[in-house]
Length: 234
Image (cartoon, rainbow, N blue to C red; front, side):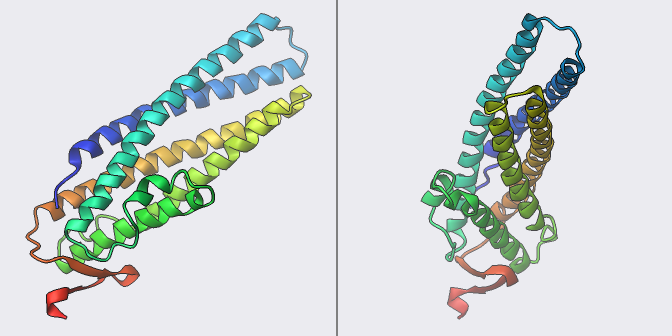
């Protein structure tokens, strides 16, 4: 088993950049909402001022989308390499490597499969650390995975809902409602990015620890209980 610390660091840095763009987007969205309230109260703004703010928001969204796509590619690369890495020391991984990429794009499957693969990865390394009685065995927790996935799904859903409000808005009141939902989506996205960084950092640390261990035989790790037996000992 080898360490993927290099790709993990690149992925983490990309997440930090995403974090900055999300925070900037949050600030701009807040001022846009304030602008909408001023319009609703009868403030006298020129049409060009509205379009200038809208153009700024669109530019930021495009920039954020580009960074997010790059970060996603790095994340999936790290995810794939880390899971594949476990094949060198674990003989009962629950998922095929191809699903690490495919799980994000298959409808309905993408609602749960990435979470299950990540959880399996975490449980397996926890099992190895327990087997080797490493003091790092408490360094990672599967609880972060649940929050990570919940914030991802919730942020994605609220973003889609806000877009639907914007597309079908027939009054400024509807746009304001959509803007509020968008703010909620961005705030949850901030939490998602922070949890993503923690998830990658925690795993990368214990992966490096395991890479330095002497493991002569592949291990069979039993799910949630993390009971381990070496096949030669069975």
